[in-house]
Length: 324
Image (cartoon, rainbow, N blue to C red):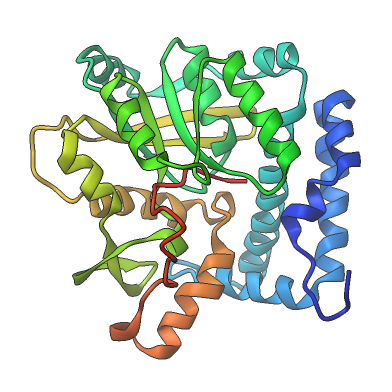
């Protein structure tokens, strides 16, 4: 690549060779291999490493112990590597092996509430974030006989082809955000009784209110209204869903937000439930580059001038659930 062009971490990890390795290599070996690749990336891209580390160090609840903070920064780097491991395994790993691995992750918080909400047959909005093993969230739901739908974006045509094929295998409705009428397809999925998975921490895709604000990691930002529009249209039950990494596997956390009977700002309620997880487990959130690039820039300009990038009319403002 040209010397003056930063190395894109997504394209770096998603090379054709790595795709082949993700298909055939044991999961433990593939994860170790990606850790080595990630360390090389951090060494080669010192400026991006420093900016990402500074964003993590800006987390409001970090202590004063410098060694503990630096260890947390390293864990955050490792969490980003794990994210790309999961992305590649989710797309390219043999279906039978992936299904056996995910079927062993049987810890679900508040599954009784989830079942009651699904049995209403009104559809559901499951808000999530760039937290933990979010790549596995729709597959975990599908393996438990739920009917999820998710909106995706793809970096490469090969990744798009593999992900769409995997979704068909697991009865997951995939909505390509770059295709026409993606927003209408998302609304239709809710009407069909599916669980629509969407992100609330895609800051670059926020469509902000002019006069409503929210605190985002200690910064005053204009509140996103995309989720609110969707919720007001159908009033389905809504919850926060997070796949947290643990030492012995994964755990699916469900936090109820509403059963659909109350008027509220779904965007605000979802973020207020996600942010404590980020504060408590900052190493499992991999949007720290957005903190450095977008929220940090807003702070320098002043809170009153915080606006996300202008969205061109050719790009449909939909809730993006997977930034692949």
